[in-house]
Length: 81
Image (cartoon, rainbow, N blue to C red; front, side):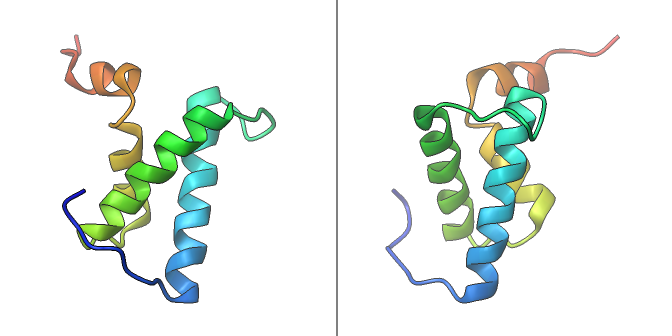
């Protein structure tokens, strides 16, 4: 990974947890459904990577995490009509 392991303050931890929950809900289409552990781990790793790059904006972090998933990445690069 391109960043060193670092500690996070309580506010950042809360933000990352909120972002993880939102990203998970986006992948399954509802906050009522729970994604599998592998998907949750991939999103969490992407969020930590984004935070390691200094990202602190909620929407930017969620977008960064979702872009780590092939289906979301393809949707972002697909031309819109």
